[in-house]
Length: 188
Image (tube, rainbow, N blue to C red):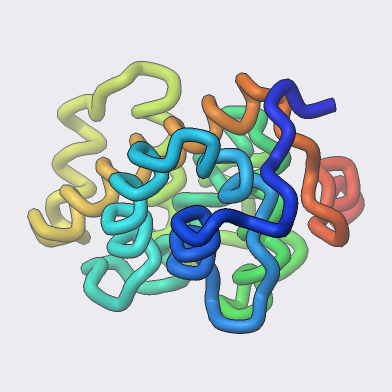
């Protein structure tokens, strides 16, 4: 059970406006967003940054982004946000069932990762998660594959999804209906 219940319709005008801004047209607001609007000034402040992280303005490709988000959320044990992203984006960005399983339970050495770039994304997520830093040897590899702009987007995205994961886990947010669960990808 969630420790903070998501708001339910009918929404006040300002809450409805914020929820509408957070979702694509015609899609019901996620439980996370319906919970965040309990603190409307915070939810309003998060909007532009969250919008940037999921926009075409981000210097990373959509596939890079989803690898990073799925791995970060899995490492944080955030089944809620991991499930939302796997449900909405995994097929869209061409993640195979084996890659989703690897992002959830494996590591960058799994055979499903043929691209050095994608292995590096996973390694950076793991390094920042485990050490809160990027060791020099990993940095050298990263700097040969990614531009400074991409590295900054990458590190900020990892931090952003740590924050989202910590919030969802801390409030014990209920899982979205229809989103996959960690145990569903074990057999991939």
